[in-house]
Length: 390
Image 1 (spheres, rainbow, N blue to C red):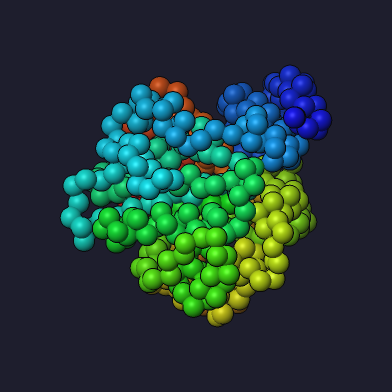
Image 2 (cartoon, helix red, strand yellow):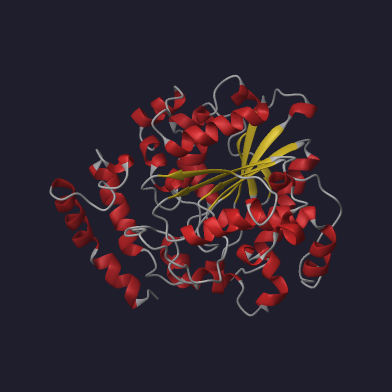
């Protein structure tokens, strides 16, 4: 049964649309007046206004009943999309929950590079169309010939809307990662947006701190854990990190977060760790409650052996936690992050905003031509990936 709060918001979507249209043509919306991505697009302003109108009004049963779509449904929906047509291995299974978006079939084993995409959504929401299109477009943001050396896989991990909680998602991510290693992919990059970065951090720590991982996760006997050694992810890409799901965000003075889609409370985090003792699992969940020397010094993507691209928006609700974690790595510790902040940017703009341009045929054609010059996140991530596979 639908919750009253979600039903109310659904019924008043027309009001949100009219309000966005009027503001766009008069005073400007909170988006069009703060970020160039929205300056000349009524569609983007209306789209984001509707998403914001619905945000934080649903419970997990609403998500399971009215919102949830499997990742496989996107593979079917977009198999004839211009961005998908030329992707080798599109839709091929790696394991029951992991699928190739594009599989490089020409590189020698010693050169095989793969990106494992861990999607956002507070561990509750599934992959949306903009995220799916977004990850396909990202392949074309990597210039040739480097693009031909790159494979991208997506993990359709279990969700809290189906009452699957910690450590289910970590177990599935480690299984997917191990399968990539077993297939000869020796240079693996973890790419996460929002909650996907939380999962990426857990995976990175699981691999870099095997004794701690075994002590923590062996208690969850319902899972068939494999604690045998794995090569670390050489690099990581964080888009709008969600690093403290069980902490209410602290707002920074002078930062206007109006219209941002970041989590305003701990509901998503509470569903993720429901019924568990948070203190016992905190180093794999609450990453702002960590120290560099104890928890991150062994992680290659942070300690200088590899690299981590770290992107977020200036107007994010989660900004304080994002910057506090960066300080843990680079100021309190001796780690390294490649940090970029988008002026006027909101949460997860690559997959919520920039990717909207590539849903249609004309936008897809621009992506196929490698035209990402005006895109803050796409340009940075595409260049970063190209450097990794050279």
